[in-house]
Length: 569
Image (tube, rainbow, N blue to C red):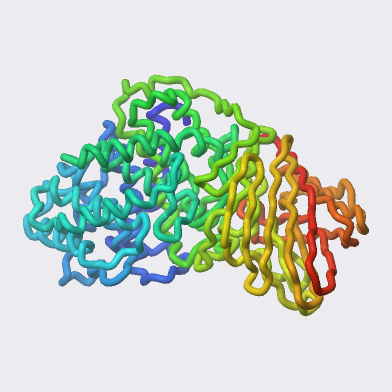
């Protein structure tokens, strides 16, 4: 996977296992791998629409796609209210609205394939089905762009009569307002900080500014300026070997995280050369090639580094992973474009510690990897673990369900947890009330629901950091603080050191690297480690080092030092 032709072939190879389902089941492909919170008709729509994110760039850039006739038949079925294979009209907050965006892009970029060959009655059904998105309530986040993409497609094929310009103006103003600064977007009113900033809001804003007819020029330039500002800080969310930060929602989309780099490949940036962008993009895609992310049929599975439904959100259906095709945006660039003519450049980052106030975080580099000390908003509906850990990394992975099995004293990584019933029930960070980034210090005021805590994270050099927590408890409590998980997928972990007492320490070595937690206060602590199965994003078997403290009622301060050393891949 080096040349444009290699990546064109990759799209074909990834699409091929889907083809038999489309040929036999039409508009409702079903991989027979379970479901999601929405109906299987919407899941089938995903299986049709999401590959288009790669097929459209493939064809626009000169590649061949032999199955347009199949898509014409499927669109005919799926948009005909009289058909047994009708996708159904979007109503309320609906997954169908999400998938309409790919069809909007199809009409806007390749009307000669996605519109012109259709009979007039099918065009009318298709346009009416798409236009209905404007009548549906939307989550106030990146979803607003789905309507913008549909409207652009309708305009391109001469159906401006169906476009509600007031909805368009309202949504664009709202999307513009999600900006946090320094290139970072928060996804919506909750302001989630995760990969949706890159493969969603920035991605769609670049499409708006560069591919659509007659966009708002001032807004387009604003979107492009913000995208360029995002390049430097977002680079720190990637390892030199290509892995990206395993944090936030929808990680089952996997190499969709390369989508931002694919989109900025189309821009002429003063701050980043095409070869540097190409390196970021290609390494992220290539690092997946030897991981067990496919079913026996060659379909993308749900999970992250391995198949695992635990890491998924309720809206991840069996066909959802194909949003990964957003990574293939650069395929629409001409063969002689500087992106394709440039040699990949290695990642060169000049900051060992990088405070990012707009992202409520501080990034630390060690052995070519990133540790992100994190205090972004917590969104409980997507599991606390997606956002409430004190650190995430490009190497060690994160545990989903950190308190699952906590009654057995088994805990996920990078949390502080309290129990007031001798370990039967536990609570961890529920919400933040104040976050401050001051140089290399991160201060977080947060609550577990019954305990208010002030945490100071001091980010040092060489993978070292110190977390200090101040709080008051009104009854006796057990308190657990955990370090980074190490992978022991195929090999046993090694305990490099372990001691309890005032100087309690645990250090573990796994295939992903070493992880140490060491007490920095005067409390007696038990040093422990636990084995975690199928909860970590990058390994189905990990060990987590942690310290257990038992405290009486009163005001307390506890402190631990963390040292991680990721393995170079």
